[in-house]
Image (tube, rainbow, N blue to C red; front, side, top):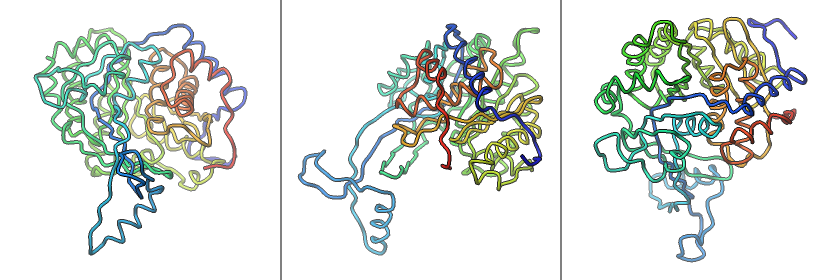
Length: 406
């Protein structure tokens, strides 16, 4: 292997099995960390676009099969007009926060969720949980609904999906509104009782910067002297739509929080390259072009971002596996890839859930990575969140990755 800017351990074969075994033991031990997660919430409306109809009955149609076919139909309407019928297939809860919290709850964590999961009609928060979020709420110990969910209309096709987000409903949630609706004392108590604080979906929610600042200045500073440092897991979600100045500001904010809590930043491959580029962290882009060199490239990305920001941990998780970097360790683990996943939306959130659960129970970095890729791998195979026993059994015989696919 060639020398790279950041050398690291690649967990394969026996080391991979050892890491998975440690993670499985923790799951079977009945570990029950406590987590506080927020603050978004989405109602996902799953749609199909009608190609042709056999009858006027709602379900009696042939859908447009591919994104390309839809794009051709839209392009053909330029200068004229077109009518494309959409059929609602399903409504389900979504959002990075609920998916992370639901994953943690399924594994046995005691979860308090604060976020935009309330009834559509705004009421005095914390309000009644929206019916679509009932399955999610059943996995949590407590859910505090501070606003109604945003809405995503997801057009699904055989070759992917197009998602139209309407996030207006969640934009009013700020530190000031949380203090108004829940009180500072209630938030301090929730943080004091948590082993893990999860804050996600910064890219869409305008108020997350204020919430992070409030947690830093109004909560973490008021915890008892000598108490164990809190652990925070941050997922920015795709920052491409935000300005570089916005991204720089939130990264600096995370670095400042590190002095008061142990911060882990979770990034997918696209997010990691954006953050590394902004920070000037070294990364050989050619390393990311092949599954054979991807581990080294991701280690380089994770270590570069960790060094620049001084965070406790940075994780980079493409679908082929995951890399993690702390001040003293840098490593990669192959993921249990599957050619035909039953469900892919939410795979990253379930990686985060597995990784954060393992961190909150004191696992080694390698076991955290194993639990993360295991949780994601089981989720895409089952089309559902694994519980502790299912994930432990999956880790007992963690499937080997297949070669030759990027």
